[in-house]
Length: 180
Image 1 (cartoon, rainbow, N blue to C red):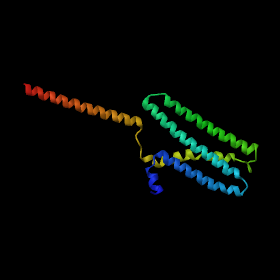
Image 2: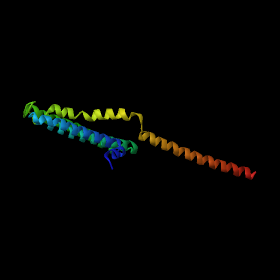
Image 3: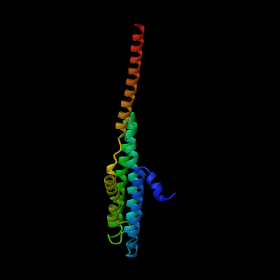
Image 4: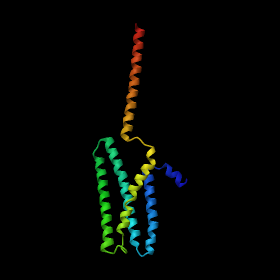
């Protein structure tokens, strides 16, 4: 099976993750040029930033699924996982920036650092750009939210109950007419 055929079958989250990985690999290929300019820090900064970016995206997906599950079940336990994922993302972003700042300014120079701060900061951007562009492209096909799906299922259930009650009423009316 070809990659394009598999890609079509993936969920939106899987497609976004694939796009992020492709952007990370493309950025790494572009950053290889800086190795020849004696600045390996750009490549290392991009790779570290991309890794943090991908981990943050996965935690964002897991956190949002946990929140939706919490809303459906009405339990606060799963909502705490969403808060945990948010704090983990915040910590990862901060740790990456602090590490890159130390590598760039304390242990090296901006031109010859071990992990370039600018490359790391640029590697954080693809998640937001990807999500916005993909949302604009896929904007035409809106999917109902779980709350709307639950409401629609409830309405269908009520309609079925109403039809059953109407059938029972007609049966009772027919019995009454036969008895007269």
